[in-house]
Picture 1 (spheres, rainbow, N blue to C red):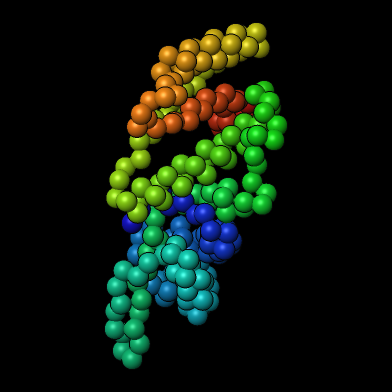
Picture 2: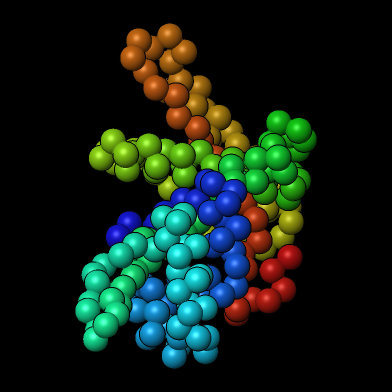
Length: 199
């Protein structure tokens, strides 16, 4: 079982987003049969089997074993991943594009950049899985509490200068065999239960 699977196919995304099927995926973190699942989700075994077939057709669940029970065979299934992320690639026609409105202070632009990040990393994970290679990535996650809007503005200026300086120092356009990497730095209000007034 993969730790996280990226769903890039629109049909698979539609299947995964169905509320009943999403519940089944959650329940199938541990292997279970349609009979066991029917008791947990309150549906008939036949309906559960119908949904499991749809999930299996898109590779979202996988067969663990088959057990013979009387005159029938019971199939034990499990989710093919511990978690699923739907790539914006699945909605290519409506996916946000950072190139449309490059306003660094716009929440909409941040969302478009995040969507591109999700799409790109998802594609890299799929390619890395097929090639049995790890993807070289790095992420930094921190939280800062600003005393004022002026402090926040000063922080963003200094951060922009610092990252810009690093990019200028290490970027080598003519490096033979070099590989381009994208750097994304984002700042947004934290969303925590302890601080509901995050904006």
